[in-house]
Amino acid sequence: MLVVDNLVKQYGDLIAVDGVSFTAGKGMVFGLLGPNGAGKSTVINCISGLLRPTGGHISVAGFDIRKEAKKAKKALGVVPQELALYEDLPAIDNLRYWGKAYGLRGEYLESRVDEVLNTAGLADRAKDLPKTFSGGMKRRLNFACGVVHKPPVMLLDEPTVGVDPQSRERLFELVEAERENGSCIVYSTHYMEEADRLCDSLAIMDHGKLIAQGTVAGLRTQLGARDVLQLSGSFPGDATKQAIRALASGGIDLEIINHEEAGLTLTLSGASQHLPAIFEALSGAGALVSETSLRSPNLETLFLLLTGKELRE
Ligand SMILES: Nc1ncnc2c1ncn2[C@@H]1O[C@H](COP(=O)(O)OP(=O)(O)OP(=O)(O)O)[C@@H](O)[C@H]1O
Ligand SMILES: [Mg+2]
Image (tube, rainbow, N blue to C red; front, side):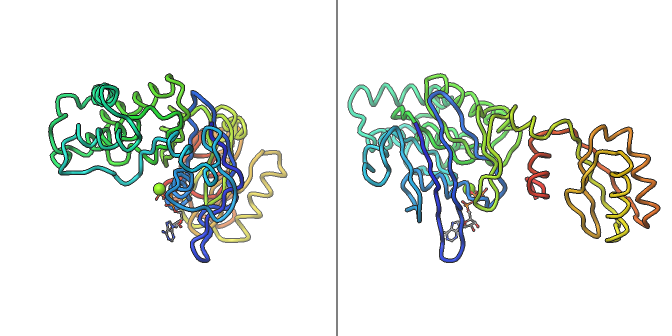
């Protein structure tokens, strides 16, 4: 349903998207996971036609977005990161507006508007102005506006930012309902839990590039059974490295992911049984450990392994 092939987007000297390729099919949620500035919105805005790609090809429902822009756009529903609502227009009229913009008319328009108001849990607020809504209600209306025309391909850009847990849950249910209807959904987020909960397939993005791609389970196995040990304190350069190397050659399966004066991140298997040896070696190297955190493998530690930094910094 959606093919993105070697997409590049440059803003002057800055390469915001650097050769991104992926495909997404019917009835699936494709997750785009990455920290602030990774390039998620730029990818989504290139697909939606809001931005003009510098290079690469995109097709939506079989239509090339450059050569058959109109048909491609018709197949798309977009829920932008910034709310796209008319605050002084009743909720129901916001939906009618978007429905009409996508060519819906008459009874079918009205029935779709009612339907999405119900699924978004806003039926009793239909005549109210969005400016009187809570953040979560605005997000749900924003979502409803993007799906009123039943698009086969949906682009959701961080749809849960700033919403309360209840609205968030409701939005998840809306996404799941669209997936069951057979929609192809691109979902961007910087929350690992959301990616884990919703996405059938996932790409991890950083600095404009996809650094890992696969199913959530597949990405997990890439990690193997390795734990991540994060230490803060003081870790003198060469002595620390030598101490860790000595442990590794002594038969402990471990590796340095990141080493700074004030922090050391290691990946290792069977971490808990090796902790005493690690602390002893570090102390012998003149290091001081003030804080320790040991994490079992998950998508967040995978990101850390791939980039040496936290997903949320
Ligand atoms: N209009 C623009 N002009 C210049 N640079 C831009 C523009 N829009 C985005 N960028 C830059 O492109 C990069 C990617 O931005 P983008 O908004 O796609 O990231 P994102 O992954 O969506 O981040 P966030 O999670 O904060 O929404 C950033 O470095 C950003 O500063
Ligand atoms: Mg964004």
